[in-house]
Length: 432
Image (cartoon, rainbow, N blue to C red; front, side, top):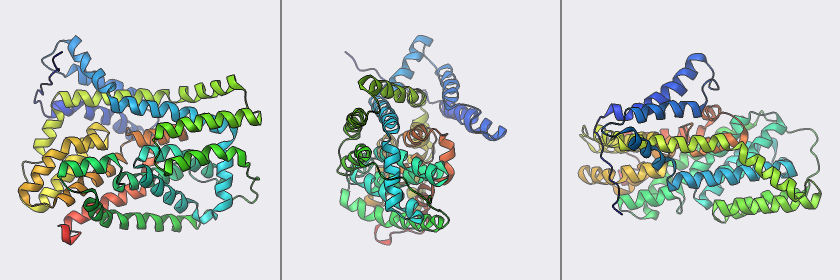
């Protein structure tokens, strides 16, 4: 069977117009009416996808409609759908059996009220370093963050943002992170060398975020009376957190959580076998919109790529480079804009990596610095797009709008600022 070939049309901005339509429909209209719940994400993706199919040239309609499913059903999208399904089922089971409430009570009894936010941030940083993925960290800690916020009367979006922000720390730095591996391979440098450069850029950002959370925690007060911790109900979450820390695949972690939540629920008389099934079904159904949005986003990005939108970005951002600083800035802009189009930081690095390697070689940019720029700016962008997997997952588990989380994502903002300053002021000096 002959492999199907893609033929970019070279229409430039027209190829990128579906993304512009999406941003105008979702962000533009929401800002205009002052409410981000006015236009559902799913509707914005449907309308922009219809526009994308309509503007795909040189193909009959039947062939245009085949482009969208290729993106909607690629392996990365289906993997995320599986995680959404398992996470939804586990979150509902944990809620029904009382595991989330018991874990929250345990956390409140161990940590002083003022250290709840910095404690959550450190936990997210540590787990994400261990598992190498921000999504797994978000799945493990978001329900706990949401429960803590509810118990102390805090802002749920703020506490969820603490977890999401910390999850990008390990996504950016971990030796087993797919973004780290991809960035170093495309740039031709060692993981350890990239870590040395990267850590000097983002460690100050993490320290600033941690200090900020300590300062904000001064005003947090714990409940006067805490219920006694029901230890048997803590078991599902403890196992999930421990297996996540030791690096077990996130899907295996969630399956363990499902089984243990079922066993604890049956043992405590919360539900029987069929009640267990019903709770799982309720959780999966609750993730339906996120699954639709994820697949719609994958299809839309494939249309943009097919029509030559990514190629247009590659050429537009690299034709005016004049210096080493300009080369580093172009690499940062390149991976950020592609990440905006693909909603996947690993895919963005894979796409921008080869060209970044050529730019680095031509203008004398240290390969370790270019790898760090690719990884850091992709994580920064991924942390700020409401249709990225991390924010969709966190928002789905917390039953809030992903836009509500963005204003509180202090660490990604600070990380991006530190990365930009490292380019402008040639830091770290040894690698610049």
